[in-house]
Image (cartoon, rainbow, N blue to C red; front, side):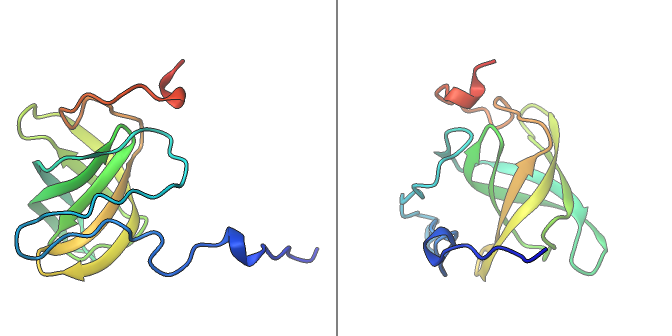
Length: 141
């Protein structure tokens, strides 16, 4: 069976996925959010959390990192350790001691403060970040 090619307008362009910018000096962000439909709302929310997993060289690590963007389904973190796409992490919210398993689904370009890492929870966790999210259609049972 021959593979079907998608029209160019249905593919992502360079930089389209990486539209959240982090300034190197003060952590300020450009609040541009992609127009791509999302499962849940996102919020720019900066908190410290603990991440543990395996780095690019397969060594175990545990580090305190910061969030950039959060949602009930995951978020965008700044990690110092180099990690691979598809790897699993365990995040711990130090305020509540709640743990969440997640999968790395996006790796951004490294910046001075670390690498932007997009994560997806294995199961939605709308209360993990300590943020109240507006209900979205996908949140209705």
